[in-house]
Length: 446
Ligand code: HEM
Image 1 (spheres, rainbow, N blue to C red):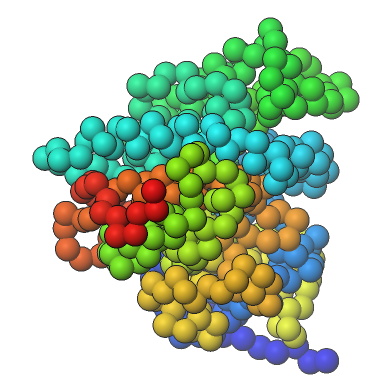
Image 2 (cartoon, helix red, strand yellow):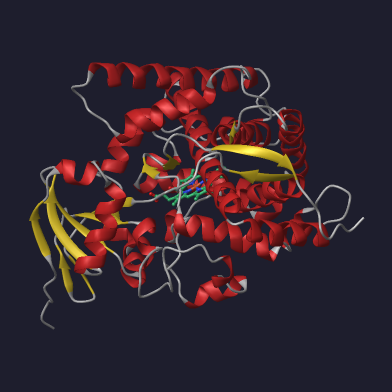
């Protein structure tokens, strides 16, 4: 079979991409189609924007596509070291096998009460905030809540310094990692400071358990109980544990927090959707604490959250390097090519989504329907490197949505849309200040 040719844009100035990565992705894919190549940052790049191409790279021929030598790895490794997110090959496989049991659905469901308790603390705080003269930065609030849930469930502890500026450190990392410039001394300093703060938190979390590693049956117990590599020193083993703690500290809260932030933003813009969500919550949930089963039954909440992640996928782009020559649908992919799959562009593909830029939660049908069109919707990626925390995130977001929407109405102080900013995750430019008011219930059950 003859190989097919696809659009080649020649050399693209790095600034053309970095000044507006999302605009670049949308305009290139909408103008040039599902596969397009260009040169940038001295690399030959192929952007793939068809569900079956994404599936090829992430699942069917995933063995030919590695994270090695990708901008994602370059950006994340200095922060995350050799944890699950940034490892490849045998090392990745061993880690995934070791940690997978912690993220099985039934295991995750055992954390539902902790999730509910911590969400209640946020509800209490917001109640006190109601009626105050300034809006609340919901993005910041979600960062704090999701990191606390993560620390309690996986590490059996609270953040070492609750009053510390954890969300500031995360925001600084997001900025400096996304706009990485080795020649900008100030940016380097900010990155190093934020990195040091997070490593210190990891050290404190791990340090608390050194004397009693198996005091709880959680991720730390699993990490301390892991096998040492041949000839590995105690110090190197300890560093690996800390790398994993930092990895989960970051990967396990930041994405979830952003998905909730965008959901609350959309609910503030679409009061009728917020109302329908609230009606479902009032109708489906009893007066007691929501169980995992009840939360699982919140179908409209699921659609709202999925639609928010379609429009604003927290992980907006994924990159891989091709190990050897490959063909995708007859198109040649040379060895060493940088391959980009963007959930952001794919989720707004005009051939696969009707009115792709509009917020329409009901476009998502029954959950099994998504299986008919796999890889059209990939907020958690797919294939063997699919997000390990997806059940965790689903339960957690459902719990937080239920508690917040049941109790509050949210509205925006300013008019006009909030711009997404493509940092490590997809962040709202300027945060997400929202007014908090008590919710009105039209259909109260009790
Ligand atoms: C809405 C929330 C979340 C979203 C949208 C999300 C999205 C993703 C995506 C797209 C990937 C694949 C990245 C790539 O291959 O380049 C990923 C991987 C990962 N996620 Fe999530 N994630 C979420 C929540 C979580 C949670 C709650 C945890 C942990 C508690 C977590 C831990 C991880 C880890 C460790 C990986 C790397 C897995 C591997 O490479 O084997 N994520 N996530």
